[in-house]
Length: 416
Ligand SMILES: [Zn+2]
Image (cartoon, rainbow, N blue to C red):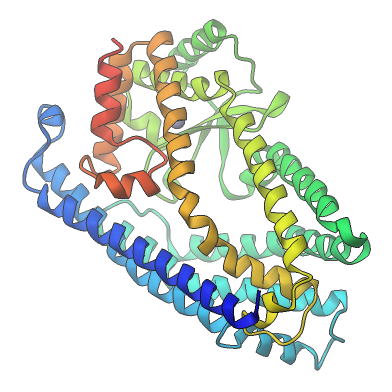
């Protein structure tokens, strides 16, 4: 391939993907707005018109921000690649570090990380202190936001930089098959992260306290017993410090796995509904969804690294993306900017897979508890999180990891 042919291919794929995303978001806005004035029949008894309209307006506000973010990220990627941005960053660092050295590579990639973070910052601020606040969800103070940011930067420096340095070193030192080594290292780091996240990283940001409510505890332990599930414990997380959105999740694996309820979820749901939500989470465990996800991510990252192993040797890959030099760090930087454009067409596949898992977990919950309890829990969560009940089907196919409300509830009701 020639450099100019690759430039053309890249621009076409990038623009086509951005256009498709914009069309999907506009469809979602139109679809939701057109259904704003009537609650769908299946929810008419449980969700009132003002909640339904709030969900429609919330969806619209997030889509508008998403469109602005899409435009800015398109300019960002084009500016750094064909616009010569990355080349300029690399040249600037050459005044301090010799090109091709580990220090120069780390400086280049760290700068890319800082630039991406800066570009994202106004959107994060608008999301939290604009939209979430306007719709009554935000509990985050500017001081907490600053403290969170400081902790994230510290983690990036203490954990991120050494990992990056190790990857760059492996790329340089391991010969032609470096990508196998990098993959093994990367996979190991990810498994380790899953293992230490719940006990060491998550507590830096939130307080986790053992579930204290005796009656609920007994109910939940009964369910765990029936499902043959052993875990390190049941925890309540102070999610209310940052947001009014409620959730429950299940983290870690092996002996480190634990079940975490947001305090905001426990406030909203009746005990039998909490049990049903937990049964759904156990369904993910029972069907080994976490393991399957890890396996697919492992396979995917191996394929992606093998591809990078090929591209790194091709002069057209660099020249086609507006860079005059070559090198491992530059290849990594370009690759991380360009890859999302080429993987976006797979988004519907991944979303489909994720929704299939949700259906499986729901079916499991319907067997272990009462489907009606899960339905009423879901309806409360849709209502209180202002999740739209009427998503555009095509938008949903691309972006929704969970099935649309109406389909999910109808399927559960058929399982009672
Ligand atoms: Zn789920």
